[in-house]
Image (cartoon, rainbow, N blue to C red):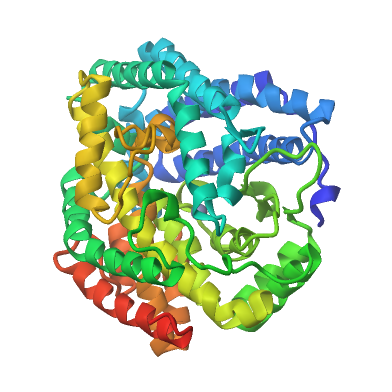
Length: 567
Ligand code: ZN
């Protein structure tokens, strides 16, 4: 089956709702656990069919946003999915109250019920107007961001288009780009401050309405976190500050030398190599062919997977007119098919699609082929990111297929970028904890907090007198802070797990792959903590974890550097 051959039909929402309600009734009246299990499985079927239609419509809409038919279908799901969600919630609540819960837990495991209980806590019909307000505010931020333009070289550009200037070999041009970006954000200063104040306040209100002390715990529950709390996350961040920050400081010192500046400034931040960042060679078609060859050679499991993806054309990665921006990986449930969407642009980001997004797809492909209910196929977000970020490293023996002579440079920049990201990610996370624990802070107090955190996590950065950044407002360009609260530390923790796979694969490739498969095949059947322990890996927030990982990582980075003569 090819993606293009999937026949789409709009589901009859009223009929689906009626069916779901009838199943809930049947569940209430069931006389045995067996009967309830049968009803649950029937419910799974109708929910899978509904999600399949919704996903197909959404994929086809993003592939060509000008297509009126799928635009309408996509709107249809935006409007009607909440109705189905409500019915699903009623069904799950009935399952939670089942007199046969013990038998059901024996069949499905206790985690399913724990997850359902967490989800239940985060919703109550009375918060609907507040949720609508929250949505309106995040949409307003998104729109503000998308329409913010910067002036450079006599041109007016969307801020996302500044990135080639930020990496220009001419330091003056780099500085100009950061000044232009800062001024652009400053021109929206009042709105950026107001939207965030209102977001913190409405989220706090939602938390109070649901009986939480503040938004922190609700934020965790909304992400379905089922094994760690903010104390553990805080322990992780502190380890990053004490053990990872010195490693990044070393990387930054080396960068200073190799790009030939006497003191690194913020506008040098992403200018890593004087002769430019490593980019894949060849055309998009070459990259796709290399991706196939890579997975054919990596393992039997990835060979089967990639053939399924390519034969079924379950991806759309070339940039085309009318296509939505960005990239994602999703799943078409009834066809047990992952789908990868992207816009190739000729940078190493194109290779990331084949390593990172295909890593997500690989995990989904395998989970959908296990005999487990949909609710247990996907783990929580930090675990999903372990699948993809580790694949970025495990595919290393085949990166030469993309980068040719530049492979060593790519490996160094990949390892360095991954390390540099972690302290920044932790800063974004700690900032949000402070914001939601102190929801009444003024815009000035927020910026002051950000600057203090800069000092803790990125002491090597000198903001000079750049507008916007030097007054501590840099957090406002990080869209997760507005749109996806607390979803960021997931990447940081996953990155440390990916480093563990990386370091292990250098020593013993086969063992690393075996371990990775074990990890992936746990799907969502266990918690992050359980899966990490089961796989024999170090938990990121365990005492001494980061020092252990970082020591080895730095010597690896030094080896890569000396191969390239960056001494
Ligand atoms: Zn990802």
